[in-house]
Length: 114
Image (cartoon, rainbow, N blue to C red; front, side):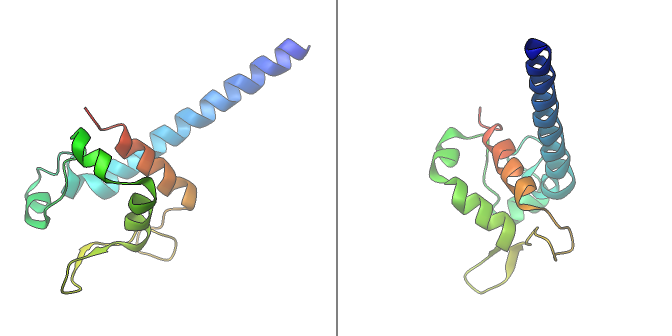
């Protein structure tokens, strides 16, 4: 009985992690890919215009800390003149993301590194 309970718990946890990964991928494709590109290279027309970073580059990934990435998603990014380069994606914004969704999105970006 204990083995069965453990097995069910493990499958439930695996399913939950898979669902989070799927949600993060879907959020990436719906919210981020138009600038950052599906693969995260920042090579879209809008990404090039805004100077989007190449998240597949290990050097770029090493320069970005998770806390800064979370802050960028939650607060957005503005240039030196205060012009919005990336809008915020938090509850209350046009496209709200929960804290867990933001963390999952940051983890997804980490997985883009080649």
